[in-house]
Image (cartoon, rainbow, N blue to C red; front, top):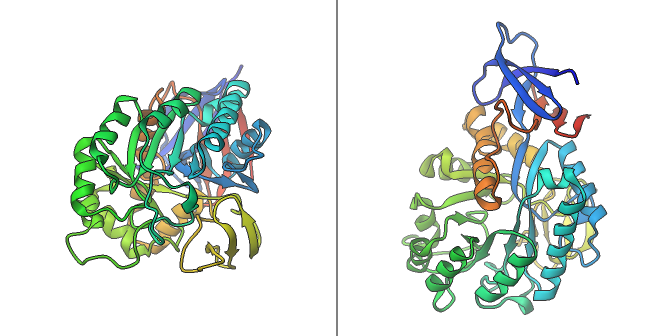
Length: 382
């Protein structure tokens, strides 16, 4: 089989390169003499928090293996080559059923296996309070149950679980989850700064969509946000869709924590790509999608219900709305989450284009719209 060559300016370095791909694997990366008229080139985006996309909801009771396969391919078309399915607060068996579908999809479809390694359980061990709970159903919120996570983990790898550390004996339970091989994120919480610090010391390593899933009004200081921003052991997910966080907050958190400790997530739901309107969804029930892609609960439109954008949309927002550089923004959508993707699900580190790695590339135009997506299973042209 002959090699295929893709030329572009590397988004992380600005250097013009030629990437040779043979049989779905990067064979060589060469420096070119000129960057004239070349598109931008990146590793495919890595999204660590995806609830749904393109009309398919990971949390649907009717989720099928074909749905997961279709979602992998649709996300790839939008530039996302690897992602972590996010299963939100529900009863034990509902979550177990979703995990069984994910396990079957990975076993049956090599393209799915290349894109998904583990799941994220966002809840049910979160705050029961209005506001911090977000769109999660209060009737299914419960205390951290290590044995419950163990049973889920036996069905399909749980990369990380989001918890609120306000629960009694939370540090001991965080430590027990880590002993299972499950990472722990802090999110959807009304915890005190001291409780956040206790969870971090016990082994929590992530912050789920930092700046969201908290009360709208908190103490000036100390508070749970400052505690997480200042903690160098917590890597923070940020929803840069233009609605969850102002651009200045995104920029401030990144400057404070450093690019290597921040990653962009879409937090997308099935309505991503849908026209504005009122919908009923498994995540949040009745929701309203506005023309500017803001998705909110119909019962209280101050509360968001996930996002209706792709990770590529978040990249474009961060590029246009902040003073972060191109390399910084793309690092938070490729290199940093690629490292975490390996930590959460095992296997090789992804997120950078290196010889011997699986081909997972995106060619972008000057406005960072995807021109072509190249995966181990072939190329897709938009």
